[in-house]
Amino acid sequence: MDLFFYLILFLMGITFGSFYTLAVYRIPQGQDITHTHSYCPKCDHKLGFWELIPVFSYAFLGGKCHHCHEKIRPRYFILELVSGLFFILVAACLKLSVETLTLMQIAEFAFFVLYFTFAVLMAVIDKENRKMNQSVLMYGVIISLMYIVYLCIVENANIYRYGIYIVAYLVVLLLDTITLKKKARNRYVYGILLTLLTMAVFTGEYIVFTTVIITLLSIAMYLLIYQISKVHHKNKQSDKQICNEITIGYLLGLVNIIFFVFVLFYQNYLS
Image (cartoon, rainbow, N blue to C red; front, side, top):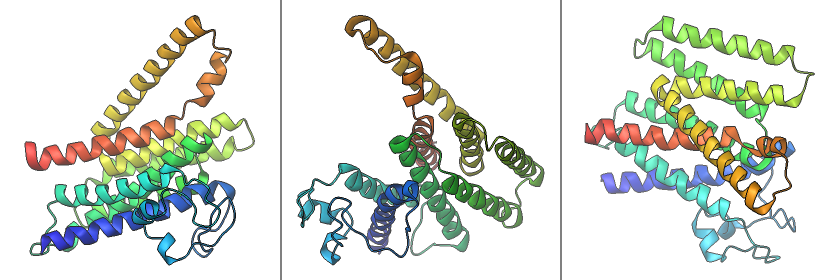
């Protein structure tokens, strides 16, 4: 029974992953993500049913559009597969079972899915555009407030602790509004702050602190490799250009999700 249950979760996961691939392409362009039919971005061919099956369609089509034979980016396949695996891993870490399933477990799993959606959209859009999308950030704020209400009412969490998070959100949003007409990099910084607050609400301060440390170490390693290559290969890019290419949101999202799943697994199976 549980095998069938986890198969359903995997199918749900890859379906969400299919939505993520669509959303990270359309959101930065201001396109509709719910009503417009899926299409090939190269030839505008509307995709049929057999071209819309997550994971499997990519394999059946050989990674190409059936109509114009344009190569489909591997990102689509990877996002769908990773999403399906995330659903299974989180469900296993929460020890979800058909026989013992409770409303609180369902709620926790649902909130983790909402958070995963935020992390994926934020990270991939940043990787592709080096931009913290405002609509995705607002989605993160909204689900964070929903989760805080759930924790305080249902799980009797410390209301003062989460009250600090709410105040922090208000301060960052106020500062973002005040500096709205200033340089774009200011909004990127505020986007990072909102992202860190959302991560802290869902994954806890310890995981966020570790996420930041690993991200900073990764950036330092990247800059070190750049400086070495600059000396040996006379790289013409300036230090400012290189720094502007670093997608901090992407690194934070990737590290946070990986470490979060690892901590869940450790707490439930290794501790």
